[in-house]
Image (tube, rainbow, N blue to C red; front, side, top):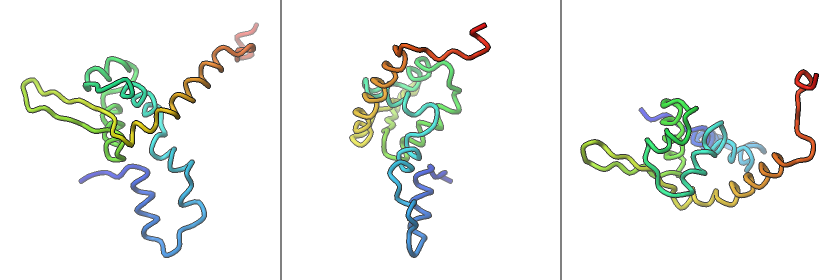
Length: 133
């Protein structure tokens, strides 16, 4: 049985309503449903550089658990952002690449990178009060 992603569940709920509510088609909520979470944007940033094997993604993100990486890749595949290619060989070879729809995330990621760089180079770094003394 296939598990629905957040966005697929939301869309199924909308279709079941006689009259959709004002927040049903919120673009921000949709973006968060599809791209939200701790790992998806990082995974997408690596896939924007080109096709990656599962093991490569695992090495690039040592802090992610295997279960979470698999779950995030599956959700992005179900949402149409990522394509999974399985090669019938021994040992098994699986590659992930961005679909055309997934590649449309690039301007968003570029903006996030620029914002992050600006934040890191700001004049007053954020220092917790306990660390100041």
